[in-house]
Each structure stands twice: as C-alpha cells, then as structure tokens.
Length: 307
Image 1 (spheres, rainbow, N blue to C red):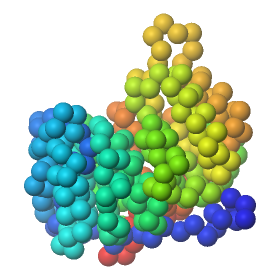
Image 2: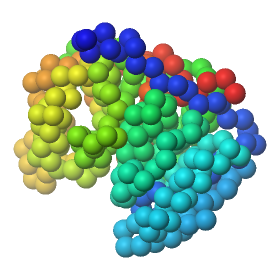
Image 3: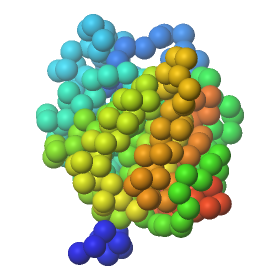
Image 4: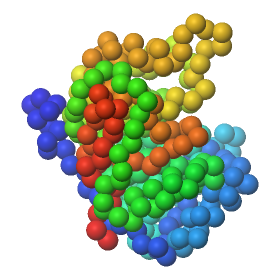
C-alpha cells in the first residue's frame, strides 16, 4: 500500500466541542513556569471556562514541574475525569516524554499545547485522536487577540479554521493529508518508539527554538535515515526562533531550504506557528491541503466535533 493510498484511510476522531462555562483542567507535564506570565495567560481562559488547576501544578524538581509521579498523576486526572472537558498545558520546557510509558490509553477530549507537549500530541495521534497545537498558558499572555479567539473557536466549533499563510515556497506542489507533528527536536526523539503515529500520507508540521543550523540538519537527516520523509506527502514549516549561527554567512532558513529541496517534498515555510510572536493554533490530526505554490495551509476539518 502506498502512502497516498493509506492516507485516504487515516482518520483521527474529533473530541466533543467545548462550551463556554465548561470545566477545563490546567496541567504542567513538562517544566516549571513563571507565575506572572501564567496568571496573565490564565485570565482569558478563566473568563471563558471553569478552570481547575492540577494539584501539583506549581511543583518544581530541578528542570521539571515536580516529580514524574506527581506530573503523571495530574495528567491522568485531567485526562480521565469525565467532568473535565478539555486540558490546557501551562508550559513546555522538558519532561513530557518521561511520562509516556506509564500513561493509560487517553480519553477523547480537547488537548492544547506545543513545544515539549509535542510528545503528548504524537501519543494522542497514535491513539487516533485529534488535538490542538497551540499556545501554552504562559505563552497565551503574549499572543494577540486574534490568536486567542482562533483558539476558542477551534475548541468550540467543528468548523475548520481559516487558512494560514506562509512566507515562502521551498518546493512547489499541492498535497492533502492529516496534519501531524510539532516540535522537531521532540518528534525526532520519538522515532523508533511505540508513541510515534503513522505518518503515511501526512503533512508534517515542524517548528523549533534555539537549535543551531547544524542541529537542524542533524535532526532532518535523522528523519530521512529513519525513512519518515519517504512516507509523508508534504512539509509545513513554522517558526524556527533563535536558530541562527553567530557570524555565519548562512541562515537556518538557507539550511532548511536546501534540505527540503533535496527531499523534493512540497513545502511552505514561515507559517505563524511555534515559538515566535504569533503562534496560531492548528488542529493536529485534521486533514489539510498544503498549496506550496500559493504558500497556504488550508484546513479541511476542525479540531473538535459536535458537542
């Protein structure tokens, strides 16, 4: 079976839509966070939903938001309690993948986060569930109002969101498939594990922060050597923030452009997704149309289904 044939069979189920006033949980499955930015990001969420904070939310253990046992308990509470209708992540950082082996099969409910939370998105897609790659609570405080409104609309309506526009076509072409991926560093760490979803026929979303060009090259080459680039149909590149080599005569974009060209996959770069000033939320697992010539990513499905 070819990737394009398998793509027509790959369907990810949509959790039930949220309603204003529903109970949502906030968890910290990765790193500790700054209280001030958290409180600022919490404000628009609390104005719309009934918020429950995980018991261990403000924990800290070195670079983690508490022990593995505490973070796991919080995450399983949020995912398993039927009174909780959606889960938001406080911050990324590092630590989420430490929990994967011990997680019970997930309930289908909206789940929001990005960066290190990519590990949980991939785990959810492995179980056939859509999720929302979007701002964590601490980042939400810095995002423009249209990002917050897009996030709430994604969570509350089965309607597909508005298309996103990139800044550059690296390789032309037009392809369709489910949108899978997130942070490049985290995604490559899950290659060869049982937590990576099927990528046959997918549009691969990638973004990252603070990775110098040679590291981007190394991770991309890992994708290639593992055969993943032979399975996907196109590439959607988000923001690669602070990924430059000091005093170099080349940029991270130069390196990524050459790598994509060698792969020959349709690719749009510069999508407003990731660690930059704008992190537009997108539905992972939803089918999309990548039109590289027009520099657009069009969503054919939303993140949630009818409530």
